[in-house]
Length: 166
Image (tube, rainbow, N blue to C red; front, side, top):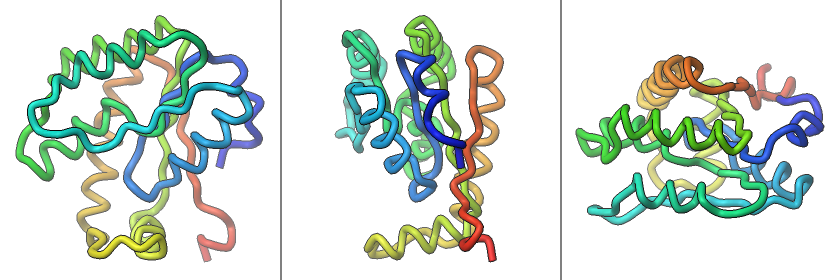
């Protein structure tokens, strides 16, 4: 877990990304409240949505922005669940640079796959993915963030609590 939230005051745009159930929403809400920033939760978009334009418009907003999930998720979940992504790596690079230009940082939120599955079940997900599927999603995020680190600052954040690790 990130030690305190003071680090967040150095940034105008903070993007929390990671597997569903990793803890993005909890962290994003806390940071947005501390910074008095606009919290943007990126929900599932209908087929045919121009994601490059959608995310570009969000990044055009004034003031501090905190994203609870953003465009990186499309590059992970799209290929796994639809066989393709609606964003290309070129789109991703363009959007990552937009975040950087806004004095931004990416926070890669992680937790062990078994813990993520437990959290998803605890919050009422009817059919949470199995641990192997969650592990695949986590690995895809790892691969994606290796690319993002060539362009932007990425801060890893594990949300495992000592009592959960036992």
